[in-house]
Image (tube, rainbow, N blue to C red; front, top):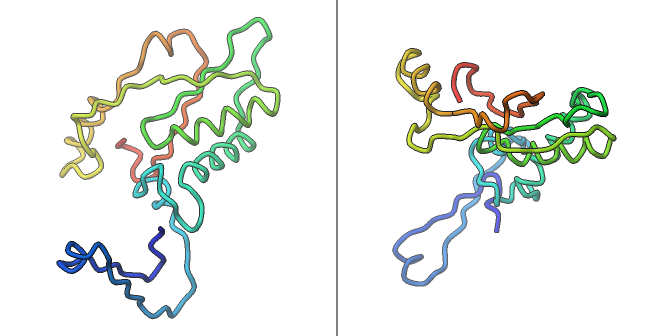
Length: 165
């Protein structure tokens, strides 16, 4: 069940006791607008937003990116281009990107080229630029055996700051 724009779900003691909740609606003065942050940052991959699954929308974003900026063409004797997501939210966009490139006849493979350190936390909220820089340097580690000597296309959907991840 999707919480609609302007809807407030009340979870109180009665909800705990009965398993039912109250739904309140706020009056709308204007139409409903979608926010890209819902798909990129806030929603879990299994969420349903505005009637579409987040994974489906992220995958379509990757397909569109491939149509606008496909992988580079390589010599037939060369290894295929390796497309890697910046973990974690870019994984589904990367799938769509690779699917669309292959559909267009451009050879490429998808692989995990970065390890995201789960202990670093959210770097964009660090109190200073120096702290953000330190966190970012520790947050992602390249998988050398995947990336070394390869042509890499990296898919990243981060739009908060250019200096964090």
